Length: 119
Image 1 (cartoon, rainbow, N blue to C red):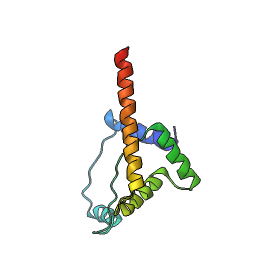
Image 2 (image 1 turned 180 degrees about the vertical axis):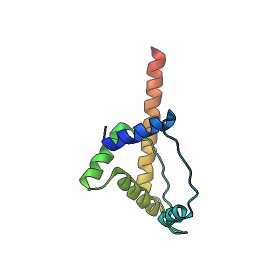
Image 3 (image 1 turned 135 degrees about the vertical axis):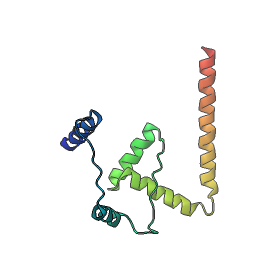
Image 4 (image 1 turned 90 degrees about the horizontal axis):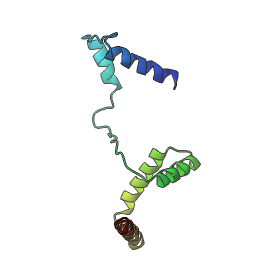
């Protein structure tokens, strides 16, 4: 565990047990300083969107990101942005691949259900 992580955990424990108290100070200068750190009005806002990926897919994304010298998040973000641009006119081959993958998942689910019911 890193030293900084330990310090944060220790501070949280101290606060939770009452050894440390927070004291709010009405300081207009501090508030003004915080406001200067905010993005300007109208600036783009980034939204966090958690997604669930199978372990194998996540591992592949991490490998690709490393090969490209970027983070998995940045790589996925580029893919999403590209998909939005590409989806203005759907590609029939891509649509068939999605349908084929969906049918395969359904078949696997049905097969595992049958196997489980047979036992």
